[in-house]
Structure formats: C-alpha cells, structure tokens
Image 1 (cartoon, helix red, strand yellow):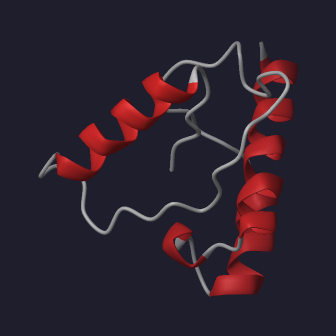
Image 2: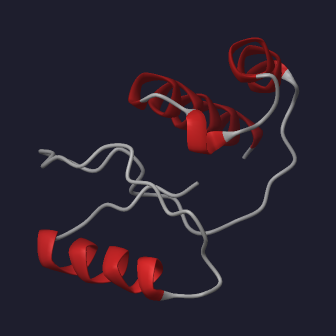
Length: 90
C-alpha cells in the first residue's frame, strides 16, 4: 500500500508509472482528492515491523491483511495508525 502526496501533476505521473510497471499487479486507487497539506510529509518508502494492533483490527474485518479489499475509511485508519506508531517509535 502506498500514499502518494504532492503536486497534482507529479502524483498523476507517478501513479501512471506504477500502473504501467509490471512489478505491480492489481493496482487499485482507494481515494483521490486534493488536500490543503500533506498528512505524511515526513515519510519515505520503508519496511517496518509493526505490532499486532492494526493486524487484529484488519483480521476481524477482512480475515487477514488484504489491502485490496480495504474501504477508504479502513485504509486511512491503517495509515494513520502507522504514522502515529512510527512517530512514537522514533
């Protein structure tokens, strides 16, 4: 899962590149909107080990980590949890 933020043209170009890249399969756009300020401006691509808290919530809703099934609301809950968790861990 990825959050793309930035200038509209740059985000659109990046998203089109992702959809055309054969390393990505079943690309799904969960939400597309203009925002006043970035929510994840201090993030970079990373792999992080996380506690089971979001996993338990996700397992109850979807029977496992299946981001392709996430609603917009659940994706935002998940990303906000990650942001807050990683800020505390830093």
